Image (cartoon, rainbow, N blue to C red; front, side):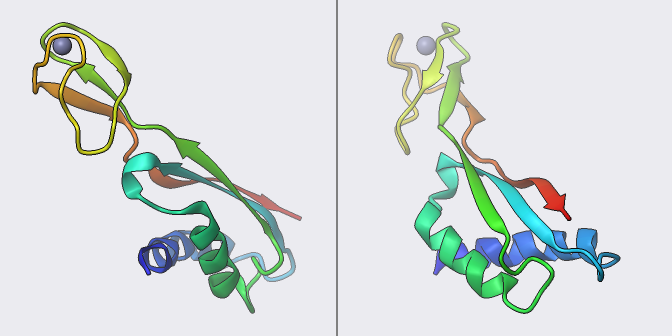
Length: 113
Ligand SMILES: [Zn+2]
């Protein structure tokens, strides 16, 4: 499962932040997930439950902030939401679209109690 691998990476980072937190607990984790990552929120939640078991993160709430795929045209300046794998400008049909958002996958915040 794709999401398990993604979550493994996220937990590597969480571990770096929580190694000194033996007396505390993480209560909320906010993850930013771009559309291009093809990660399914429900699968991320399941993967989160698996990885958090037995750690300071166990029982924490996972908040997923989804980022849509947007691009900007290098030819005519059009900018907006685009479809996956269809990098053609809807305004001038140029193939020179530059991806602006949608590739994100990072830990935005950790709330600790
Ligand atoms: Zn264009």
